[in-house]
Amino acid sequence: MDLDLDALNGQLSQRGYKLTRQRRAVVAVVAQGRTRLSAADVYARARRSCPDLGLTTVYRTLEILAELGAIRRVHLDDGCEGFAPASAEHGHHLICSRCHTAIEFEDCDMSAMFKRVESRTGFRIEQHWLELVGRCPKCRRP
Amino acid sequence: MDLDLDALNGQLSQRGYKLTRQRRAVVAVVAQGRTRLSAADVYARARRSCPDLGLTTVYRTLEILAELGAIRRVHLDDGCEGFAPASAEHGHHLICSRCHTAIEFEDCDMSAMFKRVESRTGFRIEQHWLELVGRCPKCRRP
DNA sequence: GTGACTGCAAATAATTTGCATTACA
DNA sequence: TGTAATGCAAATTATTTGCAGTCAC
Image (cartoon, rainbow over all chains, first blue to last red; front, side, top):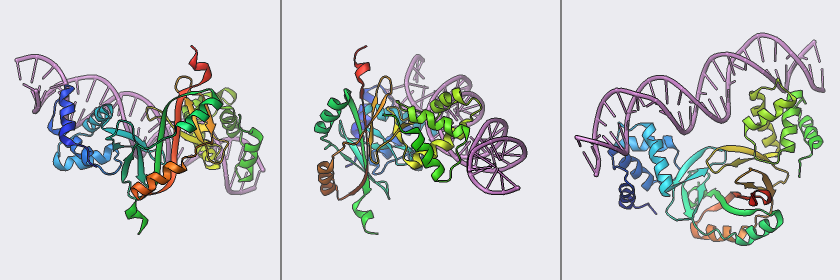
């Protein structure tokens, strides 16, 4: 379930972003990413194909990608942060507690729960943040 | 829905923690807290009643309180972190996008969704992280 | 009295910004 | 060619740690 690299690059140039060597390297890493990645992770991987890449550029590019909706922040158990590829308009992540493989899922029907919470609290719910942590098939048999 | 200050202090001393002036001040702020609070927030408030409190102590005390389950981390929209009072064993937070009022709710029946996700992905779900953001009754009418 | 607790200052860590240089379109 | 993008170094911000003095029990 990789992101479409060409499509991503297309989106970038459509929005007026220049397709620099560095940006391509970061985008390629993110597009192939199967686990949650921190900025430092992306930096380390992208430097393999683009050794003169700077960490600053990674931060700047990740911000653009998040803005495009190509990646989404994930919050880890301990509060650390990272990003994971996001293909769906509205999706959530399921992350392996051992190998950090990140899978996206869209099925999050919580409308009944939301209604209950809304009527009980008087809040109007605008967004929800859901993240699941578990063991992926590989990591279940060690 | 305040936390019980005495009960909290009791828990602390039961576990062998000393009830220092500084610790009491931090615990009091957290116990009354109705919004999500960052370490800096807690520091600012607790210093009103304990001006010689240090930020380091706030961090150390928040860690203890999280360990006791009296507070729980929340992740904000922009990735910043904070804490919110947690009375329930297993609960989640609903946070106002305007005034940051934090309400706890326990009703999070997602077992059907979990089953679907598990059978589709092969993962075994271990934990879930759910946070709702919305407008509280007051902030809905400006 | 004594060990846990404290504040301070310094150390870390993660991210952002200023700026002169480079390179895409 | 002109402007956006870059890397670097410095600035910020958030958090943690070392340590000598202090205080709860």
